[in-house]
Length: 286
Image 1 (cartoon, one colour):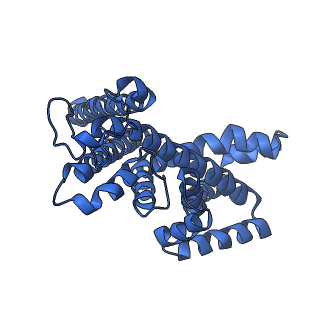
Image 2: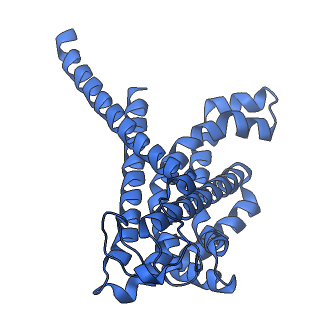
């Protein structure tokens, strides 16, 4: 009996150890990205906003490893400083939509009735429009800016989390421990905080991690179209927009910030996938 069980147990252990290694690698990479954003001012070799037309459009070299832009500003310094804007605005956006969507979804699932129906129809309206088109309209009304872009994307992105939290809440409403909590005299707030939210946070956390890359791309898209960060603010999407007319002549001006977006999105997507795999193994084990 033990001989037939041991191989599968060993496979599970090997798989879990591999996932732990991947998780450590991607967490380390994400932490390094966050640290580079936090200490961007100290890491910049040059002032990211200082103009020097005598070195405008300089090729990547020993002094300026990523070259300079059309105003003679060091691109490497601007990418470091732009990481602070891009990464922190993305994390702020994901935090807003995940927290607000979870609160709305848990409240709807727990209360039900007219409130549940009304809020879910509002979410249907938000989901009925193409996401980026709706965000463009909202961002245009708010007249651009990083804050306006974050608000515009938050308006269209919360329904996903509301639906996840609502479905998780509805799945728990008829369980024995919820009935036991009600019979013991626990209030609605206590039941939500002690029982429903802890069992809801897993799917919400995984969705939020996987959403970081998507939200970063959409924020960069709004900035690229002039509805996000405004010049001279260093932000990867606006930097690509400023260099798009020089792609054939000075390609590093658009390729360098584009590569920064690519690397950051890849790291957070792989981190989200690894966290999902790790949680799946733990749930299957239990």
